[in-house]
Image (cartoon, rainbow, N blue to C red; front, side, top):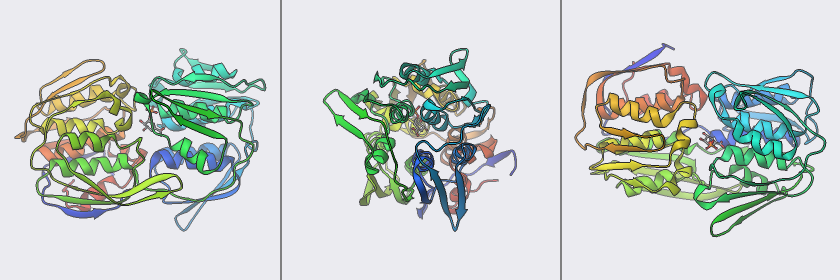
Amino acid sequence: MHNRIIIKEKINNFEKKIVIPGDKSISIRWVLIASLASGLSQAKNLLLSEDVLAAIKVIKKLGVKVKFKNQTCKVYGVGVDGYKYKKGIILDAQNSGTLGRLIAGILINSPYSIKIIGDNSLSKRDFKRIAKPLKKFGANLRLKNDYTLPLIITGSKNLKPIKYLENIGSAQVKSCILFAGARTTGKTFIKVPTTKRSRDHTERLFRYLKLPIIVKRQKKFDLIEISKIKKIKPFNYKIPSDLSSCAFFIALTALSKQSKLIIKNVNINPTRTGIFTILEKMGVKISLFNKKIYKGELLADIFIQSPKTLKSINCPSHLNSGAIDEFLVLFLIAAKAKGISFFKNLEELNQKESPRLKWGAKILKKMGVKVILTNSSLKIYGNPNLELDKKIIIKNYLNDHRIFMTCTIASLSFGGTWHIYDPKSIQTSFPNFLKILKSIGAKIN
Ligand code: S3P
């Protein structure tokens, strides 16, 4: 693969049915939970991206056998107390915040010190957010500068359950606490303001596996109770498609003329569908059909067609957690909408693989769109007639997969000549992204 792609032509008038790879959040959770189950679990359509492969490497280092056969991933779970801990072990979460944070919760009772490291991007990200609750449980934990990886965790035999207010709206923090609570005698409680409700795949998997979790949705808070897990039955899973990966194709259709797209068998967990609500407010119609429930998750086929006009939005911040990975493409849609759009309380976006709020503004500025950026908000002055006729170079973006894919969609939607560097960044979450784009007619060199 070259170290950049060049796109010079827009794409319009497509009518296609596509299949998007497996969900990243569910794939990583399946690998981790299957490793702790008592016996063989198998997954089909597991996302084979670097983040998920990193999770597989991590469980292998902890003594779990993994095999691939006929597109099926087989994890030979060792039981909840079966990891083979070795002295001096180093686990590499690579680019994955989900893996780094969830595995730390799982290791809360390891008898030895374990070091968790990550790549250049992950090593800049906030791990204090999980150190705080894990220390409350009684784990011994050290971070570089009290904030980032490497993290050294030495489990404790004297763990005590905690009560914790998860106020960031982070599923990674919530899931880290759930895993730690699942290894601690007694009842751990997590309280999450309903306005900060984050993706709940861990809760749904635990419930499906009949593990001791109780989720109560109250008026202002969700209250989650987790107790020590004694045994996990092995379980097979067919991973549905990832809505966050679909978002790039949804945005492309919303920004193009006279196009229609069907995306099959997508996970439409209600904690992830903020993008639908936001797009509907902006005048984009999305239809869901063939809805079904699969192992506690909601799935559907998605149909979307190009809208005649796009409306600006003052985006309500209670939708932020449910669309957290989709804002980069939503900013592109706002750039083409009639009027001024405003996105607020989005400081979390700067905590991702790159500071995405800043990068969103930077990309739009390069496109000549007027924006006003603060630490937590972005105002976008939309222009329905926006057409580009210049050269735009995108590089040095910490290899953030979603920046690369967003710029690809921008180039195919607004024109101009784009040189987008480091296409290998898509390996993190969506290895066949460019291939699917080409299959609907995109010209990419
Ligand atoms: C994820 C949670 C989100 C999301 C990330 C995946 C998960 O992060 O941005 O891509 O699988 O739990 P936060 O929980 O930090 O918001």
